[in-house]
Image (cartoon, rainbow, N blue to C red; front, side, top):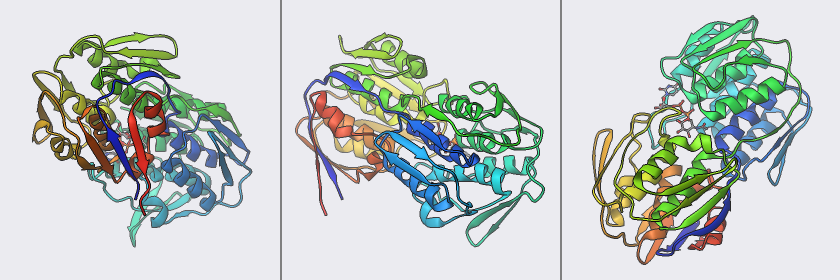
Length: 419
Ligand code: UD1
């Protein structure tokens, strides 16, 4: 298993080009199942989760080829309706196969996605929504079996929580249902808007994506599309925090500053200079940063996917910072690892209290999940001495060319291949 070795201490300076958003590319790839025509998706990041999805689509019967940052899908063969454990277990987003296959085949059997280190992550909201659209659901032999013999029918679906994945699965199925579907309390994340834009390009009739009420008028069929995925706001936020933690000066290219408002506001409040242009942001350290409190919330609130990285920064901010995690029940796996750098953090249920320390010192650490991993890399960039980060396959799921981009900004970082 590969490891990342970092010698911390240098200020990161220069430009970094932000990749396409993983969380947008994934549902868009699944959307290609809704048409028999070819499609082209640009600005797709080179990540393990994308490779898994391409493999998944090919298995189901949609010929899909990825070259660099472009994915092309071709005319479909007959689709399989079974998504086996070996494909689903690799990635929770695999549940997004359900919506399109239910819409196209009226049935889909998906191996139940397990929990993960950041929480149980059930799919009850997805399944309740499919039931509202007329599907029958049963669980047999570890598979969720979903059947809608007479096709899907539009319905009013009031989500008990604005789940990102459930909102996407509803969009991916209701576009081909009979009549109108209304999602109440829909997720408002930019990735939802990106998916809705793709579906509308395909001929769907969706209004309101990006707000908490979405209307979908079902259509008979959908056609191919060409689309460029939006920039990854979580990757961008990670590089902004890299500028803050290393007292550096980083210009991020290919970003949508508005998608990053909650993170930019907190960084500005703590004293980081943030200058925004139409598609770029300059994050520059000019003075010591102040302790902050954050509470993770659904978009446009502070993203849970940036909580771990912000905690790494808080470890060095003078005074008492506090984080309240409201989205996932177990998303403080990085705390024990940050403590190995000498951080002063205590956790009480959903709240982490962080008392800033003078310095962090390099340590051997282990990644538990994707964003926890980036927090450890950020800590390693500023820690004195050597940091060895293991289990970095989690990082390869979500950060395109991480060491290359950090190296270009001046970091002393390398990947060591180990068998
Ligand atoms: C997506 C993102 C993930 C991000 C999360 C929250 C992708 C591929 N992943 O994940 O990076 O951290 O949004 O912004 O886009 N829940 C239920 N029942 C359900 C569905 C969700 O209880 O049926 C709970 C989850 O356990 C979790 C919370 O709702 O506690 C948020 O989940 P959700 O918004 O669905 O996140 P994902 O789509 O899994």
